[in-house]
Each structure stands twice: as C-alpha cells, then as structure tokens.
Image (cartoon, rainbow, N blue to C red; front, side, top):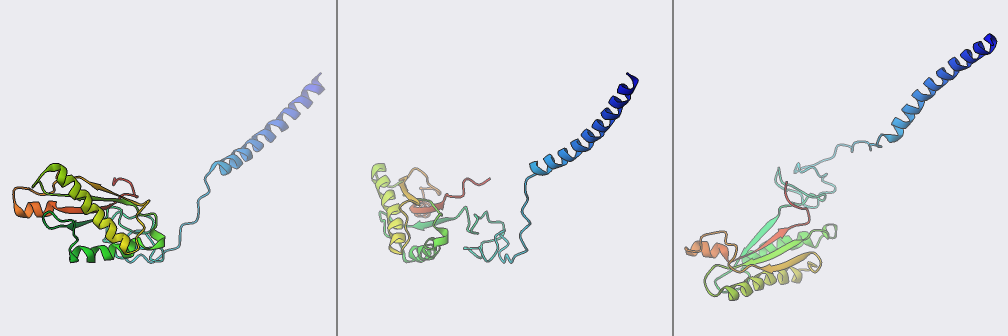
Length: 194
C-alpha cells in the first residue's frame, strides 16, 4: 500500500505541476484571446485647420479651431441664415452668394450623407396663418435655389415653416422684425451637440 501511496503522491505532484503550468498558459492564452485587437495608431498626418481630420480626408478645410466636425471635417453645427424683405420669399443677391458657396459643399459626392432642415420664419406683422404659409414659402425658396445649383435635397433635407412662432429678435422694432424674416439651414446628421 505504501508503494501505491508513493506512486500516487508522485503522480499527484506531477499532475499538480502540469495543471499549474497549464493553467498559467491557458490564462495567458485566454487573456490574449479576450483582449481587443488594437490597430496601430495612424501615422501623423497634416491637419492644417486642427480639427482632428487629416487634410487628405478633410472635405471642409479651414474650419475654425474648436469647431465640432464630422468624419469628413465639416462643421456639425453649421447654420446659414438668409433674410427676406417684408412679405417676400425672394432671395437677395447676398443670400444667393452664400447659398452658392454652400451648394459647392453639398454637391461634393463625398458629403452626400450631410442632411438637415431648412426652416422658414416671419415677423409678427399680419395674420398668423398667412405668416405660417409665407415662412414655408421662404424655406421652399431656399431649397429650390439649392436644387437649381445641383444639390439633391430629397432624402437629405426637409423644409418647414414656423411663421412668427420662433423670433430671434424683438418684433417691436423694424430691425428686430427684419432679423425675424429669415430661413435657416441647419445641419442635423451629426446628432445633438454635447
């Protein structure tokens, strides 16, 4: 019995060593398998506007420092405001020039994912129902102009009219009313700002 006990002790000792060394190896293998594969850090690249997007991929070079940008380097919080004469949905020459610059960006095939809304507004002079219709006509005028410049808006931008509901200035002054007669183009594909 003693001989068996000695063989058993030797076998147990060898088994314990094998298990310990095997466990250590298995744990290392499991840890290596469970660890996420981390890609090598990208090589340093030129980023002239310091927006975190390499110049070679940046579709909107020159964004101001600190601007929240999407993966193509374009301003996520971009807003363009056009202004209108009283009781008019006709774009001014200055507004057309701004929209021409925006059209150059929106016709870039690499930016076909950019989307948002075009919203029209009025001052508070006149009937609220009339103003709501006028504000929608203003938004539609901006959309029509962009489309005339080759921008495909159908699945990317929606037009809305809020009438006199959302003033940005005091409607008691002519200057304030002029600021409220506007259409706003706002990018919305980046999600809300943090």
